[in-house]
Image 1 (tube, rainbow, N blue to C red):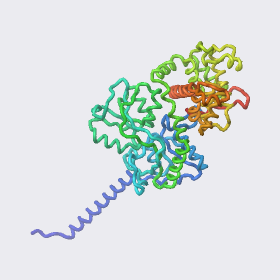
Image 2: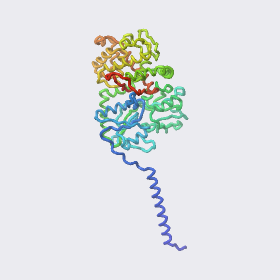
Image 3: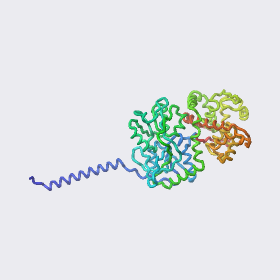
Length: 501
């Protein structure tokens, strides 16, 4: 039996232990550096509402005046106004980044087409909802508000390709979707149920980027919200909806996990505007018109944007410069009136690019209605005058939509409709309410009480909705115009168009 040198053994053990501890400390230090916790976010200012928002054509975008517009923008501005607090928007690159910012307390609210969890959690667990996850897959608890708008996630496909009837038809096909929008749990179930589908998570800023790629053939299939598909149908012409991927879902906002007081305040706000009709009017502002234009018409419009519009763009921009009416809106009106034909003449005697009546042209000093520049400028002046005659309390964009209705049917009939709307306990300053009253002017029981009598009230409703649909296409395909110098005009006429599309 060998003799053990205990002194030497203890020395070796001490050396080994020191080495192991050093290695462990280095490893620990390395790990700490790799997952270093970011410094605590500075306290958010109490004198403003900070909102991080995901861009999208119906939720957050720059309107013709260069200011943010969209359903979420309008809701947040209204909420901030009721709180007597200014609101500041921060656009984010993708939903994962949005979730990180909110979860870390760097913004009061996260918004922009986010799906609430499909099942309502218990009140004890509501503060730790983590349906939205960051792009690095670490769970970030966030707090959900109640829902404000119901949509359905849908599968879209390239219209020149194969239309699937269900997921089994998509074995081997690539299906793209946005990460971190609140559908993560639903999509995890689908991935498990249909492993043959090539699921492709994408961190693009908004769903319309997916629609664009499906429409031009770079993607075969994608999952987007039904409302987004509706507002994009005339902008991207080569996609269509195949089927919904599940039940209807509510869109909501997310807050930091400790913002229970703010959540309850927003929930009360949603309840109030739902009950008094404000929410429906805002929804109609952005989703009430896209179906007015057939896909075939939208395709012809896009072709004429390339072939015909360039001949007249300078005239539209000139009209904007001297009247303040945004040039793409004027172009949308002109397309509805004449399809940009400067020689157009109707059976009723209206003529030219903007289909001016002889009386209107004479009143505006237009000697030749077939001169496109004169016609466009005169129509812009006329539309501006109609906007200025409306009560000052009417805000944009309703002010512009009501003025367009008057452009089509006359200010007197519009006023009859506004009075009728008030009698029907509707809001006479809201286009979504007045458009309900206008068709009633064709019915005896209503027009007999109206100052100007009978009117084909359905015509201005269709006119405005079609102009808005054309305007959406022009906003998507044509840049705005920012004149360097403003043509001199009387101070009381210097009114800049500020409507949201």
